[in-house]
Length: 120
Image 1 (cartoon, rainbow, N blue to C red):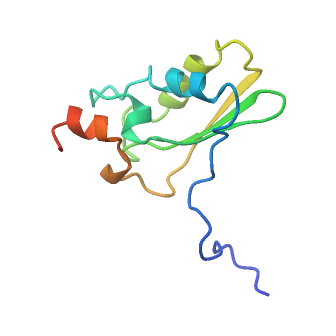
Image 2: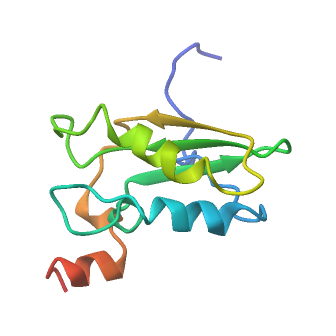
């Protein structure tokens, strides 16, 4: 056994979301209310929200990325996401973590986002 930080082959790069949690769809809708100021598409459909985890206490942990590390709103957008999700009835607390792995790519966009941006 080795002590490397390499993920096991087949391990997903993005943790799965709590899609079966009753608050999940409301959290997704809240994320859809947040827009990257440079792109006229919400951050959820852009594929910037990687994971939405909701624990048994209704604490929400969101892992997200940005389209580029030099994004001018890099310091602000996690707060915008938290501000959008916190008012949802039943949500205890919200933590938003910014990650750069895996790197965001246009293939992460929803079909709606691709259509809106003229890529389809």
